[in-house]
Length: 135
Image (cartoon, rainbow, N blue to C red):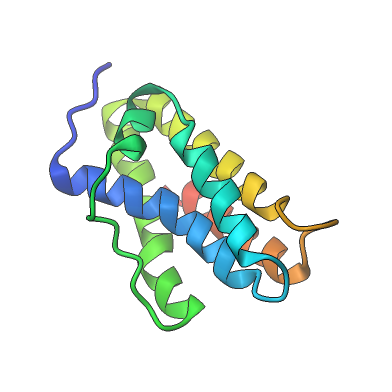
């Protein structure tokens, strides 16, 4: 199948993916949020397939505004579910690719610190995974 994505669809995919990394970095305030953000973003930039092309585009349409983790989550978690719904309707295999891309980026961000992810990070990873699986 082929993906036909509008500009809004692409913005949703980017907000979802980069937002997941942003949530992890924000939740890692006691650790190394900058390392988490860098590792996760590099992982997303390394993605392949049609979704990889969308994530690699240089745009300013990613909406990650918020003064708190909760405010950012209010944008990102629904965007993750919306992105999965959109991709499942057009190309289920690409939906699986998107899910894997996001979870690999989240794992890369979580492992950027030393040792095991903190309980806060583990909870945020759970919330991101649940949002991906809600579709």
